[in-house]
Amino acid sequence: MSDFPADAISILLVGDGSLVDDLADFLSDADELTVNTESTLEAGQTRLEADPTLDCLVLEAGLTARGALPDDVREALGGRPVIVVADRQTSLSPVAIVDSAGATTSTDTVDYLRLEPGDRTDYALLENRLRTGVEGTHRGHRLEGQTVEDRAWVHEAQLKSAAMDAAPIGIQLSDPSVPDNPVVYTNEGFQRLTGYPASEILGRNCRFLQGEETDPEPVAQMRQAIADEEPVSVELRNYRRDGTPFWNQIHIAPIRDDEGELTHFVGFQVDITERKRKEQELQAQNERLEQFASVVSHDLRNPLSVAASYLEAAQTEATHATEHLEAVAEAHDRMERLIEDLLVLARDGQQIDDIGPVDFQSLADQCWQHVSTAEATLVLELDGQIQADADRLAQLLENLFRNSIEHGATGVADTERLQIRVGPLEGGSGGRDTQGDQDDDSGPNGFYIEDNGSGIPPELRTKIFEEGYTTGEDGSGLGLQIVRTIVDAHGWSITATEGTDGGARFEITGVDLELRR
Image 1 (cartoon, rainbow, N blue to C red):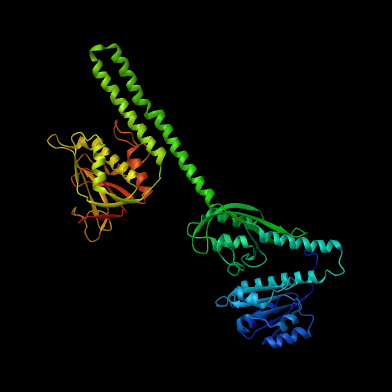
Image 2 (image 1 turned 180 degrees about the vertical axis):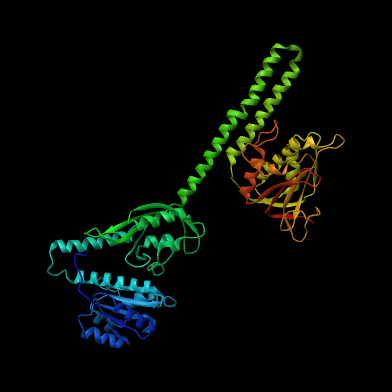
């Protein structure tokens, strides 16, 4: 309870619109409120000068030019608080109205409130503002003759208010005695955090910051804590006024009076977007480290054990030494490929250094030279420029070429050679029509790489991109994961499907590709 309990409050409503009429009807039913009305500012000034019992002026915005109060009206107020009210659809600037209405000295109290006509929640908020404003004015007027302790109490309250306004975090107070627990105070930090001015915050429940990707679980946790009148802390994905999302760390605590009765809730809000980003990066890094540990402990041990056994055999069986040493060399080659792929993931992850135009045909030819192609042939049907990171695109092409050579050759007849084709995807869908022909109703949307080998069973076409997945003994199990990482880093998409001749086909879409005609 307040140390300075207010007597019955006498209010002067000035305005000639339906909003003022509705307010008069609503406030007249409230306890300890006396409502007086005038239709013109001149009549209101006369009433203020003649009736010293009036505690507060409620003025309809737009009653005068730009809402300005003449000097003689300000004098008639004598420091009594003013609340300017307006329809939510008004075009008048809240800042202009409040500035022009007064607040020229530290004793002036000018407030501004947008109301929805007929909305009793908005009207109840106005009533709360009236009581709070008048009570504060009464405290100031009663200082004369009060004790030093009384003066210290008021000074402390003013100091706390100034500290909240200066705080670098968002702070708001809400009033649970009013329906929907609306915000009744917001500091500048909260306005900077959310991008909303005070006029669009006050009178609303803070749920207006929630959006499409806001997790309902912490929201429910907050609601339960508020219902139980308990403190709560959550992390929530909120949205600023311009629609940009941010991570918000919210602490809410109940405020109670001397009798232990709940009066308000205070909320502290901190932007933790950067911290959440770093946490996600750390989680991804830890996942890669776990993957590397798995590969080192299992996949590298296998070829190392093979090499050791064959080396021992070569040392004891001279007649088969060459055969055994060839097996050792193959095991070492596999270990080298594993290490190279691990280094690609460890160094680069989803890092993209430099996006620019890349000559696709030239890069594909270079990549083919870097791959052990055996008896395979490359048919390159794509001539153009692609916007990409050249180094990462090269890794992608080399891994797809190796994948076809390592896994596709088993499906090629003895009389044929493994053929790998690279070509553009035409059309918005990036795929082929039901007859197998390329759609050509729009420009290139990406490219494909396919072979005439054994193909990929339908049930495995999504699994092959998973961590460490392999169908053979020679591959590292990381090549297609690297491909998927590079595709994701560019914002592209990749799909495994069946090739024209039944082999494996990889379609990469969402690509900025310009063909040479």
